[in-house]
Image 1: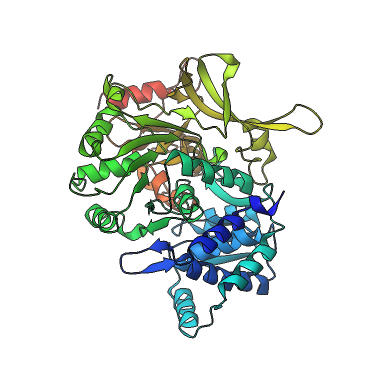
Image 2 (image 1 turned 90 degrees about the vertical axis):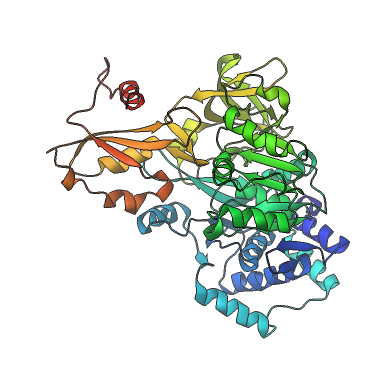
Amino acid sequence: MTFNNNLSSKIIGILKDDPNKVALEYENSKVSYFELIQISFFFINDLEKKGIKKNNTIVVFHDKSKWAYALLIACNIKGIKYTNLDPSISKKRKRNIELLLKPVTEYNFFSTKLINLYEKLELKEAIFNFDLRFLIKILKNISQDVLISDLCYIMFTSGSTGIPKGVPIKFGSVINFINWSKERFKISKSSKLSGLNPMYFDNSIFDFYCSIYNGCTLVPVAQESIRNTKKVIELLHKLSVTHWFSVPTFIIYCMKMKSLRSERLCSIKYFIFGGEGFHKTKLLEFYNIYCKTAKFINVYGPTEATCICSSYEVDSDTFLDLNDLCPIGYISPYHDFKISKNKRKGELILIGDQISPGYINDINKKNKKFKIIKLNSEEIISHYYTGDIVEVSADGLLNFRGRTDLQIKHMGYRIELEEIEFHIASNTNVSQTCVIYHQKDNLSFGEIIAFVSLNNNETKNFNHSILHENLPSYMKPMRYIFLDTLPVNKNGKIDRLELKRRLNHE
């Protein structure tokens, strides 16, 4: 490993080129790269005072302030692993995550007391005021022992056993992702990327790393304002954002609220969307608004493969058949893949250095989803079994055809239905349960619906608090259907197809 290959070398290059370049742009303020890195050194000093060293792990509740972004950069510089968590996480779920992570400290930027403290320190000029040359020199010295094989961050996803899965990603994988994004989406110094995604959501990896480490500007959008689509669109329009990235659900919601109009977002060059399927009928509505001024890119990638592993550029030919989802595209040059049993259709297996080394402190899950193949004494190739069924064309185009398990994508979030069932079944009054993801026409937003059979058939004794203690809001069933008994198939298992048929006939 050489110094030129780590993330700090990218920051040094930006500082040498244009230290006054805007790194973060908010509605009423801007933060230059020079200022952002100086704040990062405040946190480097703070981490050192707390005895936090390379390869330690910290928990962050990220509010998209300059302070929070600066802390992540400080972690990158020092080789400290971090995980961003949902600020509304339940105490029990947080405790389960901490048992896996064993973090050494926590930073909560939603704490008014903490932010006020930082702002007072800034006013008193307690933030280091380095000379640029000196800053670059010590940045190089501090970061030179951070290796591409070291872990950069950990992202949590739903787990079928009732406990979230922690996915660690290496620095080398992140660097490859940054380099690929720059080429694939023509990200330049003048680009401005939207920061629409929650920081605890996998899509935020693109927002943060592909903007800051490509030397352009990130426009963060606070999560408390995301529901006000008119305000969000006005902000992105006002600040001339060039690259949009979100889940299709948010785009559909914006269209439903009539916030997307051709006279708005004229500066957008790339609309990038991913994290869930985008049915072509809804995509066509969106495409017709902006197809004359922007490119549309559908992206795909599990958390375990460093955010994005494939992309597909939408054009008019995409809509020749509307009864389908948009293709998930062609695999990036930093990934390789194969289809199970070497068929044209089957489970997608991702291969290569972009793959996570395996779930945090969870050997059983690792053995199930990850496979390591040794070609010789030195070369090791990682395989990740995605659970996604795909069909591949002769030229390598991938189309999504379903799942091998009960995992779904809801509002962009990856959810194991078995995790919801696990916590419902924890209620002592529950005899049987089955959770179904229901989309009547494949166009509308889906519903998570729980079928429940109780021991005494008294619904008033059903304890919802178990779900509130264990599940985030986006995983909680939207409604419950109580039955005396749930139907079973010939094998004696709960008949999910029959339950789906009942929903379709409502």
